[in-house]
Image (cartoon, rainbow, N blue to C red):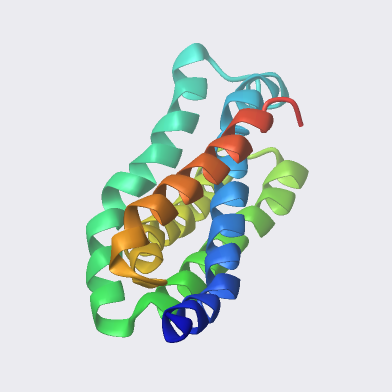
Length: 159
C-alpha cells in the first residue's frame, strides 16, 4: 500500500501542470467569441469575413490533430507538450504585430498557429493524464482535468 501512495505522489506535480495548462488553453480558446466583434470593428469586416475567425481557429484542430498524434508517438508526451506550448506562444505573440498592422489575414494566421499549438496540447494531454498514476484512476483524473478545463472555458468571456 505504501509503495502505491509514493508512486502516485510522484505524478502529482506533472498532473497539476497538465491540468493548469488545460485551464489556460480552454480559457484562451473561448476568448475567440469575444474577439470576433472587436476584429469586425477594427478591420471593418463583413459577416462572412468575421466567420472565418472560428474557421481559422478550429480548422487548425482539423489539420493538426492527426500529425500531432504521429509526432507524439515518435517524440513522446513531454516533447508534445513543449512543442504545443511553443507553437501556441508563437501564435499568441503574433497578435501584437497583427494588431499594430490591422491586417486581417495576419490575425487569421496568428489564430491558426495558436490553435495548432492548442491542438497538439489537447492530443497530448488526455493520454498523458491516463499514464500519471494507477490505471484504475485514469478516468477520474481525466474527469477532473476536463472539469478544470471547463472552468477556464466558462470564465473566459467574463475576463
